[in-house]
Image (cartoon, rainbow, N blue to C red; front, side, top):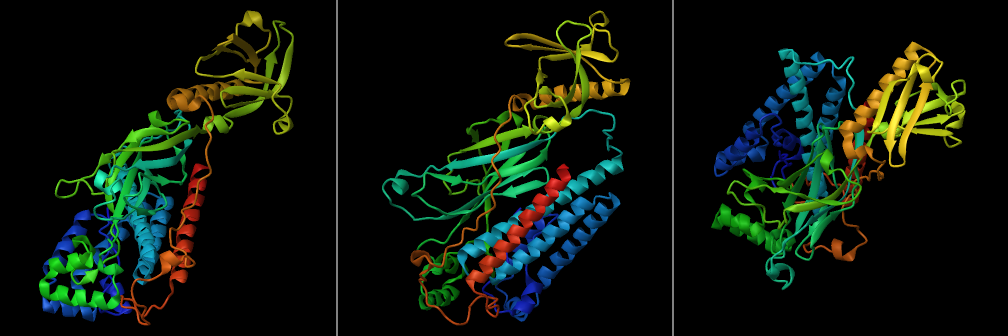
Length: 531
């Protein structure tokens, strides 16, 4: 869903703006649409305009109340389910959304507004995901469908890394080669979702006809993901103002265009000002609006140690047309998976290993089952300082069975038989007690189950790149080209929050700090959940 943006361009004060600020319809997306239509249909009324200027917004207060009731309902649901983790996540994202909304209202620089709008969309998406998961769990509880996994072996979880994301573009010949046509620019970023885990990439704000593809340098890392995961890749796009829009004209010319737009009509005025229908609610101008333009799906079968190409499903608007961003319909990325069974010990302890065919020749080892093998050391202290003295392969072609009593003279014995390219490998091992045998037996069964369900992802340990933090795509003040204004500077801001005199550098720092703390908190919560 698309988040509501803060108002800009109205005549109310900052104190009244908070009461009139449209809020995203969290439960029913149709509420946002109906609010949009209701505000637009009454925008011609002088009475409503006066109420807007005075800070009275009855048509916006109702969604605020409904949303507060919905949030209270879901908090109560989380309490009844004793799910404090999801409740904390919802509360955190609500605070994030409130802070980002204030920054969006106070931002003056276009790139600051884009970043704030992106953060707002991500927070709303996470809130919806958390609430949907709460609703699902509550439904299962009411219907008595909650299943207990106690006593059942489940496959291990894994780390999933997505990197090297590249989206090819398909411009027309007149746009890319002949350098003709409109010089359109777009801001693009991606959302990657697995269940309630949602991450966003950095935003590319200079997408134009000179680019043949959009490349994201981000590395997104998901923790504690099941083998039957379904990752959603969504591409969001915002069409930035074109060269002849009012945003790039001097203030005096812009004022003349605004005055003229009031006389020539609303539709013509919006064309001259570079605004879309979705950017206006009544007499309020909203922030940047990102549209979902394409989506794809990644699963276990798409995991590979190299970059591969996948298909996009292009989204259509209400008119049945795809977005004007010329997507080719494909995207490239590298999806790597590292199951826990390859990097975390499944079971460890002392075992006696029969050497050669001598019935009385046994040697005691400290054994660790991990990464497709049973590694054996003399003692636990040697694990970090020496290579294993003996490595017994435990792969998909391994069979675990009771040992033949005719070939060994010890109790609690079992046989590990593995077929390899070099031949058949057989090892007879003995545990100290029946409980130890059962522990190792379950460990071997778990390891074989993990390999069977994770399939080719268990063939080897894939390289996982460290995750990257979102880099703010704001222009540097030291850049003359980017920071030279095309309109006159004035001491009083003409935005709805002109009295909030915060410079661009401070707003950039505030937004960077806010998003950095959010990423750190989510990372800490994800680490705690995986442990």
